[in-house]
Length: 489
Ligand code: SF4
Image (cartoon, rainbow, N blue to C red):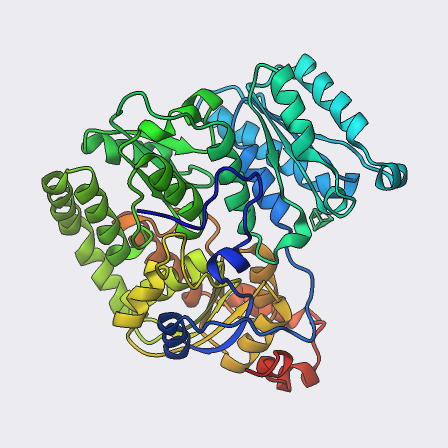
């Protein structure tokens, strides 16, 4: 498939806003948004007030630092490198879990006022050479930031020079935070750097599936699942090495746990090297998992094996899931998550008979890099049990609080702790869908249904917390409609 939005010859990645028409401001409902999507009329509505959100560079750098044997030089003032300790600690902990040694380092260049006037390329160059001499990384990423971008540091020029001096891949990473309001653009920037500087053209075909996820909590289960279909798994990027990544073009297919996370790498590998990218629902809930498995089976030519697996697992889990769904039917829920999960969880909740009272997504990609709408949205367009109110906001928590206060749902589902805790303080029972595998497959669906039941049966925690918490939001704010903050359509 020809993917026009990926240009590997440039070190710059077009942001999601201008590559995929992504938005961070919308209020309406499912039917309206899917109609606008079909007609290509999705338009961002600016806010007259915003609270702070997340920087895309933290996404890009956290992705790159999952690789086990690289150095990331972050050309930036010290404040931006606040992401560094978290990234390396996670990398170390996840490596220990699989008995590997994590050797990646992040070095901040600590730009100061003098650098912003006279430029910091000379010291950046010295830092790069010292880093290579000290840590001997297998590849080196030089990342920009808002400050280096604003003063026009020529990182590309430095990278060109260093490539002829160093015997490892040196790659420019343009993740200036001001480029995009959508932090998922950082996933694309990291993928672009890997595609541009690490992945090599194929020499052979290997019985391997590239599998992109975040924290690998189900690494063994995924390994066993794919082994049952006769293929090995190359996990990305956690616990992968530069050598592993250099072979991604030789794999049978690329699969991801979340379409928002995987769209750039998957489409890039397909368009550059012909590695098929599995574009389907996320493997969440029964419908998503089966669609995902069947598409993998079709692409790697293991249809019979996949169907046998589905039949076996259905017999074990479906009766239990159905019994729990009967107890959950009729509950009302609000969802607040990234787009890779909001529309997927909406489908899963409807599978369990739970009414989606409102779905808030932190952004909306009205198409992915193949030019098609996200599969989860396409599914809801065709099969949703009912139309429901929907908004897009880059984690504007004050809007979520307003929605929760108006809707008074039985449950709030979020994937971000900063959002979940405020809902609990407001007295709303909440489920924090932190682990990307929390609703994975039949087993995940069963335990998710049990978690929901536990959450609604005992509401003492949120009741007590709400009774002892003074919220910063006034009655005046709760009477407002979020829509009034958005520019007119
Ligand atoms: S938005 Fe800019 S200044 Fe802020 S953390 Fe990101 S790169 Fe640094």
